[in-house]
Image 1 (tube, rainbow, N blue to C red):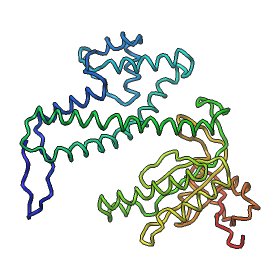
Image 2 (image 1 turned 90 degrees about the horizontal axis):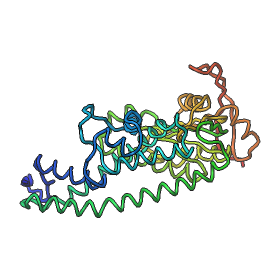
Image 3 (image 1 turned 90 degrees about the vertical axis):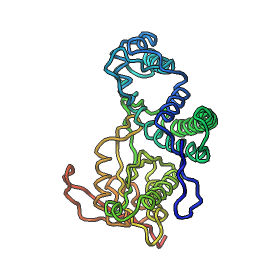
Image 4 (image 1 turned 135 degrees about the vertical axis):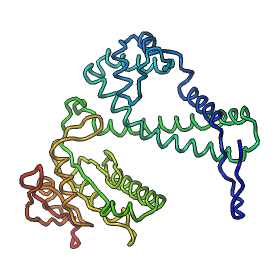
Length: 351
């Protein structure tokens, strides 16, 4: 292990360089700690231990987002992997997940946690590198012991926080969904909304990585606060756009207007466009599908910067509400929707 000398008199410690051999050893230590033990089993062995067929185990493994080694003799799996397969099989056996839906359930779980894992690994790696920055000259065994100690300190804390947030979300979602049909046939009447940053593509060319990350962080943080503060929930965020849902038309209107008022409020910030549509949607593994989603997206794309556009159904629900002013625009013909009725939603300043 070597440490480069600071340049230009900069006394800030530079990151520790780790040799490829030591890096592989550290990665192996981290993997064993995360997986609860070393890799011991082949595909056939893990399927036998879990009590499922090799084909079923492969389908579930790939659906969760992991690669399967084509070599049947490759030792890939741990005791934790066997326990996970047994858990999925037991959920199917008990009727909690239908057999034809187990692959979709595994895929939804894998996709949701993959993004979370990317962030967590970045967080943990940064902390470990920072802690090792002053370890130049230490022997490799000492460094591996230091990494094991850091891992033992960090992972339980992150896992505990993750479990808490998950339980809190389950409790919140239960309050909305108990009594509604399950995900396989779930059709609910909701208001679906989108908010996106105007001119985001050009911003990506103008802003540096740090400034762009700061903009997205402020956008996601403020929009999540507004949406959650009015009984809504974030369905997903994709770069410059957030998709959300809410049950109450009045809450939906308040979310949309406060997104314009409170998210990216600085004069130098880009403006937002917001679109809302109301009606029956298909709820599947936490995502929303159907013509209402398409309508909300089209309205968002049609909205002028700094405005909120809503569909006819939501306008009907808000008609007569003293806090809001609605202005009907000429209907538009857009791809996928023959006649798009659209209304501008504003605050009623006379209220």
